Length: 538
Image 1 (cartoon, rainbow, N blue to C red):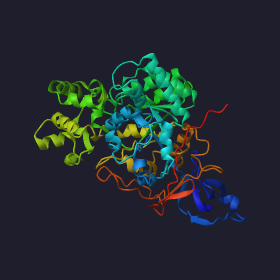
Image 2: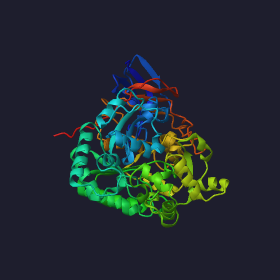
Image 3: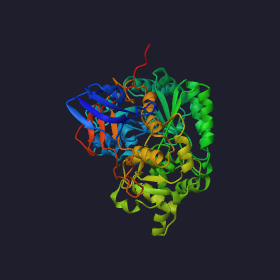
Image 4: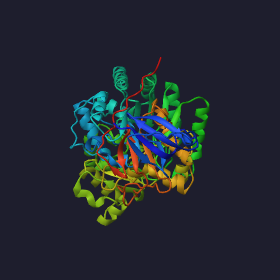
C-alpha cells in the first residue's frame, strides 16, 4: 500500500472543534502524520509516493451509519456504491431485532420470509453461516465498507421460543442469554430489538432486562426499535430508558422519531425526558435520518395477534374472511400495535417495493390511490398485496414532522443513521442520500447544524458509542477511513421520485487508506471488513 499525502485539506476532525488547514499523510491504512498549516510554515512539507490536492475540500472521518439494513446487500453486491458514495465507511447491521444470525435452518427460513421486504428473499445469497461469528467471517471475505453487527433479539427468540406470543420458560431464557453472550464473544457490539415486529414484540420487559444485563457485562449497548413511535411514543421511550437503567446497560435509541399527527411538535418532550435521564447518569445516544417519511414493510402494520406463529400463519389469517375483517377493524378503526396505536391512514402509505414483478404497477402509488384505480376499498388492496406478494411488500409512511426532525438532530447525543432499505423499485431516498442530506440541506442550506458539529454527529460520536479506539476521528495513529467532500456542493441526489440518484460533492472516500471512491467514481477496492466488539479492559 503506497503512502499518500492529502495536501491543503480543511480538516474537520470529528470532535466538534474548529476546522484547520493541514497536510495529512496516510500509510499502511492509518493516519501517520498531520502537519497543520502553521506548523508547516518555513519547514519542509511532508512527501509521499502519491499526493492529492485537497484545496477547497473538507477532510473528515468516514461517516458511520448507526442504523443500516445492508445485511444481505453487502453480500449480494460487495461494491455497495449506495453507501460508499455517501462517504459511509462503517455500517451497523442486525437492526430492529431481525437479521440472519444466530439461526438454525428452521429459524433462517422464517426470518428470510418475515423481512423479505427489507432485504429481499435472499435467493441470490449463499447462506453458508449460522452463528454471529460465521456471519462476520463471511463479511471478512471483502466488502466496500466496514460493518459491525448487533445481535437481533427477535431472531434469538425465534430460535429458542419460536413465533408464539408467550413468555419464555426459565430454561428458554437461559438459552437466550447464552446465545447473546456467544454472539458478543464472537464480535457483536450489542443487542437490537424490534418491539413492533414479531416475534421480538412478544418479549416482556423482564425478559429484555435479563438479556440487556448480559450485554452490559460485555460492554455492549442495547438498540431498541421500541413499542410505539405513534400514540404511545413518549411512554415507549420512557419504558426503554427505565429498562436500560435497571439492566445497567448503555442505550441507543433507534431512528428516534416522533411521528403521526398525535406527536406533531412534541420533540421537546422527548428531549426533556432524555435530558433528565442523562443528568441522572444514564448512558444514552440515539440516531435519526434527515427525512420525514418512514419506511417499513406492509405486513408490519398488522396487529401483533395476526402475526403470531410466523409468516405462514399470517397468510392463513389473511385468507380467512372473518379473521381478515378483524385485522381490518384493528388497523382502520382501533389502531393496531403494528401501526403504533394509530388508525392507519391509507393516504400516507406508499408502496415502495414488491417481491413479485407482477405487482410492479402498485409501486409509487399510495394504497388508497391503488384501490381507487381498481374500484375497491384500501383494505381490499392492502390484503391483496400482502397475500399475492407473500408479505414481501415494502412501504413508505409519510407520517413525520419537519420540526421534530430538526429538534432531535440538534441534540448532543444525536448520531446519524440511514435506516436505509435498499430493496424495491422505489426505495426511500435515505438509503442513498442520508449523509449528504445532512451536509447539504441541514448544514449549508438551513444552518440547523454547524459543519463541525454535524461531522461530529456522523463520526466521532457514533465511534464512541461503538467503543472503537482508533476510528471516528482525524488523528494520528487512527485508521484512515476518510472522506473528502466539497462543502459548497455536497448534496443528496436521491429524492422520492428518483431514490437511487447518487450524491454530488463527495469525490473521494478511503477505507483502510485505500480509495473506494476516487474522482467521484466507485473503484474495485474491497477494503472493508467486520468490525468486532472491543473487549472490556480490566
